[in-house]
Length: 349
Image: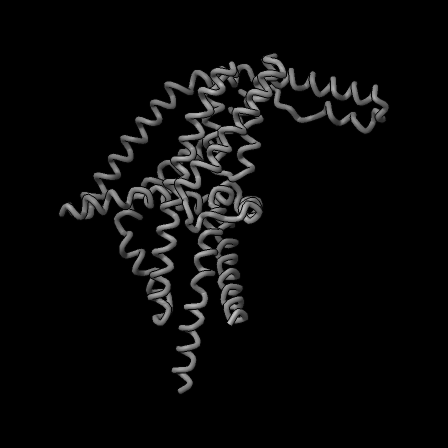
């Protein structure tokens, strides 16, 4: 029984890995569909709500689509109002900050040489490729900006079509499966749907909580650009464990470069540790409870690193959902195996 289960799971993983590899070859196209699919997944309940009120499908999708455009425009305006001036100030100050970091590295190099280390072994420390003109580097990204604008046009079109044709897409996907497995696959789909909704809405709440706690903490400590640092901390929460350690580097760097002293650095470390303890041991258990999203920390870190290596940014973001889906499929393999054996015995008789 276990051997049959492992065999089925192996072929499922092999198939998923093959599909993943093929998709990674066209990662820009896949990124458009993933982003549009994620947004569609979040707003489908609203479309269903309107359709249940006897509003035609096209009108319901169009209404939700217009609402999304209005909300997106409002969020962009708010972000521009609150963040643009601060971001420009940070970009302007960046060369000064990096020069201070370069001086610190040179000081460490001199200390190590005085401590007796060979000069050749530490010579490379001062040759780090630190940026000296952030503005010129941003201008050099004009081609990437043009590509981004193209995606900005494509994504809404894909989103609208996904919402409007969602029923036929679902039916076509079910029809691809052999008939004897369809009922089990529908059940798997329902469990995946439930787990993904729990994950997406849970992550949105966690990002908001981390941001709301981080901003006043950095403001009280006196770190420059606390809003930007808090937003970075909130977004990087999407990357389990690793994101926490990466997000703290920005406020630590700013506090050090501004000469706030060792006390401020300790306060930042304490504040981030406390916030993420609250997030990990209070907020997450309340949101996820005993759902399928609860994964072992080692499995989580391995999934994030592996998927990030293969699929880049989207791999990092989607690593946990992918492992959760694999876990759900694994739990249903005994039923699929029984159906397979039953079908085989029936055909033999």
